[in-house]
Length: 85
Image 1 (cartoon, rainbow, N blue to C red):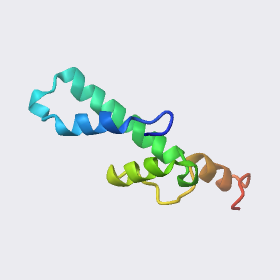
Image 2: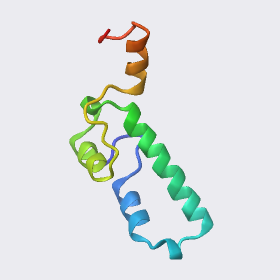
Image 3: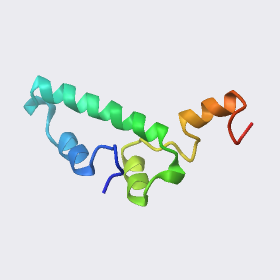
């Protein structure tokens, strides 16, 4: 089961398994938008806050951020407002 706000694993699998030649233009755009949105959500969500299944799913879909702080946390750190100055 994917985390809240993330693309479901079944949606990812069905999009990946359907040949591009069988997809409509709308499906192509939808897949691209969902993929970028899910990738962004993966980047903003720290690994420590992901469920085990989400970490595994991100690893297989190359969305893993390898225990890096979230972009929000990196911005806070850069401004001296975070935990890791």
